[in-house]
Length: 131
Image 1 (cartoon, rainbow, N blue to C red):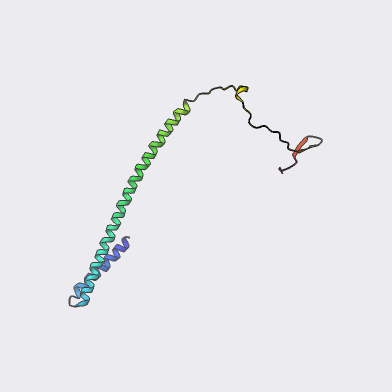
Image 2: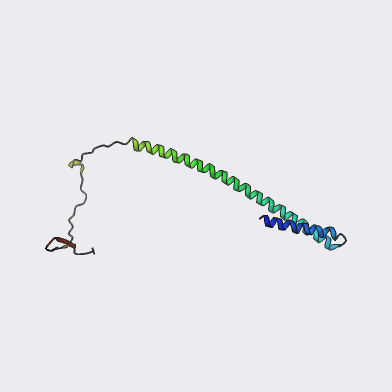
């Protein structure tokens, strides 16, 4: 960006020089003066835009730092809370009773397989599905 500002200022200075040397140019003089003023205005506008962008970036960096601080604080609070919960847990033994068991579905399944006996061992191979 510095390069474009520098180039713009050189062009602006050149136009000013032409304006000063061509005082008796008539109509061309007014055109050059207008061009010079336009370039000056555009240069100032670009500089203001850059400064505004830099201010916005600084604001965003500040907001980001604040959010990061809040995030770290929340993480710390969560870790403290759940650390206490884990530390305060206790083991309770529950003995099931037959009267507390309810069967809603019962079935029998059959899965065929082959039994292969060799001299050293017996191998069980499923008849379907497994490879």
